[in-house]
Amino acid sequence: MRFYSTNSPSTFTSLGEAIMKSLPEDNGLFMPETIPALSPEFFKNIERSTFSEIAFEVAKQYLSPDLSLEDIRKITDDAINFPVPLVELEEGTFMLELFHGPTLAFKDVGARFMSRTMALLNKNQSKKLTILVATSGDTGSAVANGFYKVDGIEVIILYPSGKVSPLQEKQLTTLGENITALEINGTFDDCQRMVKQAFLDTTLREKYRLSSANSINIARLIPQSFYYIDAYRQLKDKTSPFYFSIPSGNFGNLTAGLLAKRMGLPVSGFIASTNVNNSVPRYLTSGEYQPTNTIATISNAMDVGAPSNFARMNHLYHESVNEMRNDITGYFFDDDATRAEMVNTYSHNRYILDPHGAVGLLGWKEFKKSAPSNSQGIVLETAHPTKFIDVVKETLGIEPEIPKALADLINLEKKSIVMGPDYEGLKAFLMSR
Image (cartoon, rainbow, N blue to C red; front, side):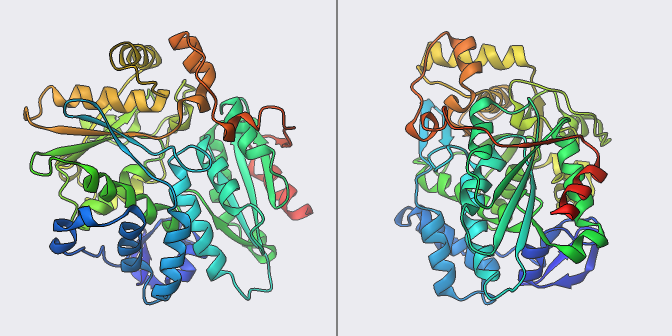
């Protein structure tokens, strides 16, 4: 399949170049030439499939014939080796638990798929591939884990100092080997801006083979559509309308859901649930897109004032807010509302939400007030609550058990390089290596 930039729809490039290059030179984002449709028969018989089989069926639509079916099967079987269970919270409301992978966050799906795909595409290259990635929390840890000790690839992670949870920080600063963490005295938007500038810097690109592991990379985006389709497989009532409520920051997760819908998933719509970094909900209300400076919240992985994937969303809907409104409804909530929902859900359902899942659940509850009475809501629970243990303890007054994967990190030494939020500092660091 060929890919094009959202800024140059008539110019095409190969799968390998789109993935390995990550960002087009015109500063757009890569999109597939066509969004392939899965057969009605596939959805009719979907309950016979496993999660990894669904992943293979979706992935081969984009990766074949550039990669062999055997290689695609190896990638999906190895990457998708954990469940994403659909848990009924109460009648008509479900939590899609995306935190059962190695770093306990939804980004394990995309990062594991991408690392294995890129390792395959990078074979026989004499020059090392350098992956630059900006993170507001979970991306960094998932990418670090996915690419750890992968031959021929190094990862440099930029994260905002003091704006990720302590355990998230440990996940991305304690591995060493081919993983380097840069602690930026700024916001996630600063980190993202610096990474984008690096990709467009011709001097830097002469020294490095650069790629990205953020959701700006199409190889991160495609696999995130897998679990939307797997959620439908698990849904017992497939006749009533169902909606996904997605805690949203950089909007890669929601964009992946849009791809799944266009591949044939019979979803009725999407709810863009954000914290007070609400550029997209405001756009859906006013029709004017006005990105803002980032505001720090307790749902820090969603602290994004200028979401990159809005460019893809806008492109899919022909830059028409009215078209987008047909599929997407947006709501935003502050920290007080988020904490109140965490308390309410634990009190009534004995279910511990992380702050991002709480925002998603708030979005569904607001939406269903005006939805058909038989509507079903699937809320994406994107991270294990103990990744935000300080917020959980302070809000709920309980001491949740920390999974071993996180507990083992507590006493490890953090290793990061501190720098300012200016691009020239990043460039100087990279050029001096």
